[in-house]
Image 1 (cartoon, rainbow, N blue to C red):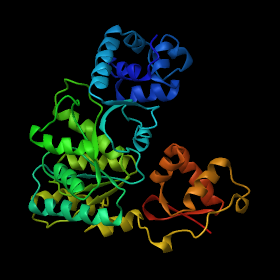
Image 2: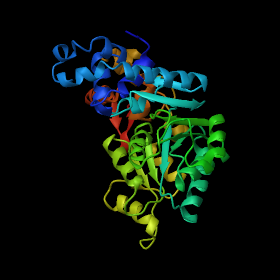
Image 3: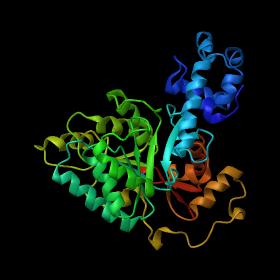
Image 4: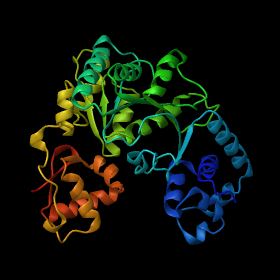
Length: 372
């Protein structure tokens, strides 16, 4: 049995009847995609309830491995990174989502685990108001937080304007695609995509020869939401893909923001609706956003000295790790997950224990403060 985790992960996505959540659950439970195939006949007995016996036959799939070999060969030839769940470069925020892809294809140089990641999404029919917001917001954000990674979908409208504004202001930016890396859609964004390879990159879960069909964009949106700390909806009609992304962000416990507009403006109706329903916080500019996310660098928010272990003798090793990280600054739970390399569900439990011990305090927006 082949033990290349990349090959096995690709092959697992090609086995019928398993799906995103099923594949993720299998890999998380068994330990690796390679072990899923190696132990396929034993899975129903070893892990009752996780895999129906009727699906075991789907794992005996030589055709899936043949196609996976072709995909991996193409990726290596074109210098595309194949990131499995066990790869340290895989977006750790996304890894904690139950429907996260078990394999991603990435071309570029961005750190997908940057400490600060924001997704900007919106209508494909962006107005001058929305375009101007992207330009002004990312210009100001680059001055307030120069280390932010900007994520969007390389689509018409707000998406591509967010990417271009990020590039113009020296911010790294990643486009999440609804098709394979063997094409760029829409083709008119090719130059922007090429520019992004030098200052960010392109990311997808889809194999080559995949058409950018409508349902793929919905699937793509969960990656846009899941790999970020916050989602900003710049403009949206009363119905649209951006609202789906906002919904996904809420489900993943990500912060969500919306840019308000006039009640009569068609492409502000969705944003106003999110704000009205308390599904997104209102922001007017980058300063509002940075304050809400507690991403400021002011000296008043920094601790003057590192907290010593002797001050907290009752803490576990994991709790102490979190305390040491928080000794530098107040941080969002997603940032703690990345820095401490602790899964989000475990991190939530640790932070709860630290609150009960009077060591940390929960602030608004999922931010935690170390009590001196």
